[in-house]
Image (cartoon, rainbow, N blue to C red; front, side, top):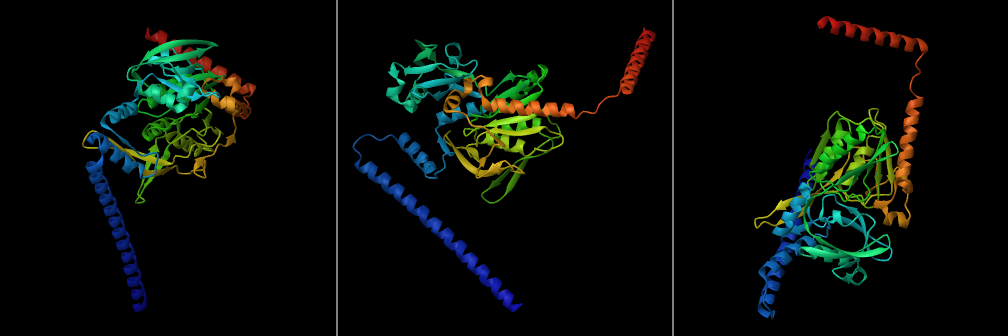
Length: 423
């Protein structure tokens, strides 16, 4: 007992010393950082030849601290930027309202136009933007051209090429509702595309699903390709309407504390396929992983994921408003799903890998379903499942049919007699 006690004391002492030294080292490092910041500030104020903007310095320091984390998912927002960010979280945005890609020759390809946005009346998918305010996109560079559109204060003039003809259009920026969900029938299936998750996305998804079912959809293709992520809460809200009772998402913070999000007993009985790609990120990856966990569930008809591996954002970000109206976005936890069967090497791997050509990738948002091999693979999987279900239905004998007909006729007669007596 004495030996055991001695060893325990030694281990405890060693652990305490290590913790103490680690904390002292962290304090020393922080003091060094503070001292350097003060030294730079003093030198700038003594020697810099021009006027100094205190606002710019504050913003620069804040951005510098966040950039120093080395995490591209963290951010600092000025008060003005934070106001726009809160709007986006609620399903609103400010601008012209387009999603774009890059053509093989370096111009801007319009992939999507948000319904009801300023661009809706003058642009459509497939248009190519060649100039911004008279300056060629090639001269500006692709990223520079996008920045020029975003920086334009109110009105921007675009040179638009459509069907081989070039024309100039003027668009005035405005606040608009973000349409993050759209849908279309593909054969007898509903293809519901989710482009991002915000507070309005669950309602838009429910509306799309309801309309699709009213049109007789027999299968469901959920398209998460180019889904930029967004709110995990919104993603879990939609999952709650799709999946049966169970855990949807598990978060683990820096202290190892775990929290879970669960769904209720309601679920969809339609065959489901999910499309993913290397631009499916964050909440889109959680969505695909959670649905994959229910493969084989007797209450569901999950047929798997189709496409290519996802972006690999398995962390959770939280926003923290600051006293001056600005805000911080910090990574506070990592997420997982209970089974995690789709997760491999930090990304979601598809059950059915189907690659696109460079042309198909470039024109993904405007491809006809018949020209999209990933959609066609999903449609084929659903068709096979429906045919299998039909083949496995128990046969109805002629005597059963007669009995059923007799019962129905009797019931109808009884109902009619009751109604007559009531009159």
